[in-house]
Amino acid sequence: MLINIPVIIVRNYYGYWFFIFRFMAKKINYLDTFIFPDIPFQYYPVYSVSESGHIMNLKSMMYPTPKSRKKFTRNKQLGKRSLQAKIFDAIIEIGYFNPLLVIKEFPIVIQNSRRLIGQKGSFYYLDYYFPTMKVCVELDSDLHKEDKDEIRDRYLEEVLGIKTFRMKGLDKALVQRIKFPELASLLRSISPLQNPPVFAFSENIRLMKGL
Image 1 (cartoon, rainbow, N blue to C red):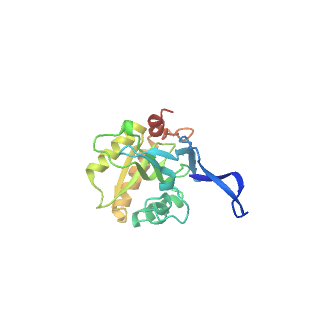
Image 2 (spheres, rainbow, N blue to C red; image 1 turned 60 degrees about the vertical axis):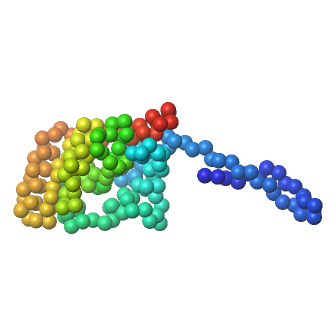
């Protein structure tokens, strides 16, 4: 970002007064962070490093201004709900998982130093995340690719300790009768954490900038 700073006032040959400005670059704080209002415990880096090694403004991609037309913002993920997501949302709203906290579209920033072979992209949105249980629920569709899902699940569990529970065809009553009790059984088998874990998502920019 550039800002104008007046440095001197001069008078020209014709007697007119005018300002001379110089441009000064605003110093970037690469350790800046931001939070989402509904995820107050997790700090996200404003700047991160892409898969290809370039610095990127992560905040402008995930949490830009309301008028932004970017495709993969979290607000757009929360606004465009599939039928499966609407069903799961309704289950949350009737208190099926109470008193557990459930966060929709929880962002995960991939750390390049821990990236798995074949892993693509710079961040994920977890469909549903139970932070005190370190469990996420993913709603699969025919568009999902098993090899990519396997890499994603491995990264979440091996790097962050998050277990993935997958559901497909949640719009079918039979699937609901089978999968929801299975998920409830999994959650009951885990001792909840007292506080949600906080992940160190700034590792990428710290390593690149030596901070």
